[in-house]
Image 1 (spheres, rainbow, N blue to C red):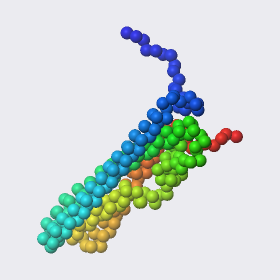
Image 2: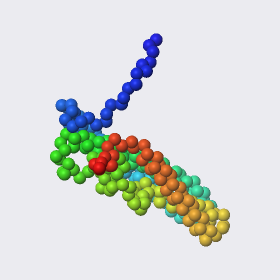
Image 3: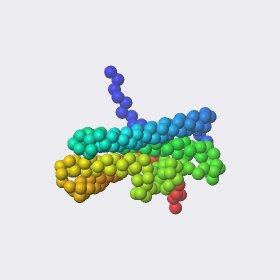
Image 4: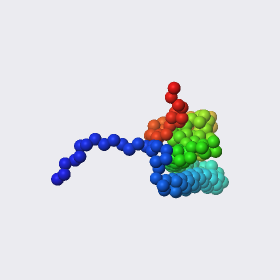
Length: 236
């Protein structure tokens, strides 16, 4: 058997000097750029489809609850039906948020790749830089500058503007409503139902926020930029 080669090898440089790209570099980069654009389009389509499925399921559940409430006069049948249906809606919301978060991460990766390609474009033709409005840097700040026209992370309120945040709020309302119905079924009173429902709403929303924060931090740490924004600053 052959012995493994123990000769140390150095990793190839990430950025070839300007002018040393191959003759087909521009065509290859352009093809890859369009491939990433197509991938972004696909993840946008899936994100909207998953959010639409959740909203449609929620709307159908509300209609079903209204019909059952009318038929049973908010009796035990309504309570049993609601406590079976609402947890299912909540589960649908949870998996929707998880998938939307994965889609957002995929989109960030595609934007990172497009920024790297844009960096290569500007290596080939640096005189075109004034005409680019998106970033050539593939760190978090560069990704935000390209995808959201922002530098660095957006304000915390942006979480409630994005689709996952909207779904998280609605899903937490569903959880609070389910608990409120259960409390009313136990004859603990309307005040207790509202109070416990509000507590469950806040706990659910806080849980989504903590999970999202940890996920963003973990994924941001794994971006591994090759062309960070700090490289634009010339050393003294």
